[in-house]
Image (cartoon, rainbow, N blue to C red; front, side, top):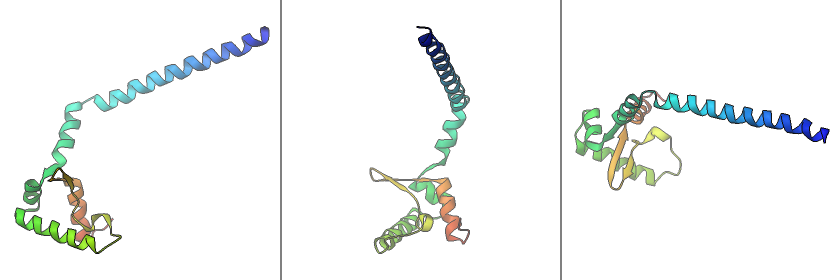
Amino acid sequence: MFKDTKLIIPSIIIGVSLILSSLINGYFESKQKFDNPQTLQTQENSTLLTKEEAAKYFQISISELDDIINKDIDRKQNMAIFDTYQFIPYANLNGKLIFTKTNLDKWIDYNTGKKE
């Protein structure tokens, strides 16, 4: 009986320690994520662009951007492997093209010789 007591007390101490550390870690992690939710939301939203906004960002017409995208599609069909930023990066969401400024900047860098 004395032997069982020796195992129970350390087990309780370890269990309580794990629970407390999880609670403390969760508190500080969630506090970091949501300290300033307005700023986080603004930063994420400001990087998303429609096709029209992307054309404006490039200072070209929408039809010129369409030409670039169509040429990329044709070139991709003939290639099995290609670099990530070799072609203009976008996502097609239900027929609507979405771009991010960060990826467009990387595409520009790649195509102007500033490859990563």
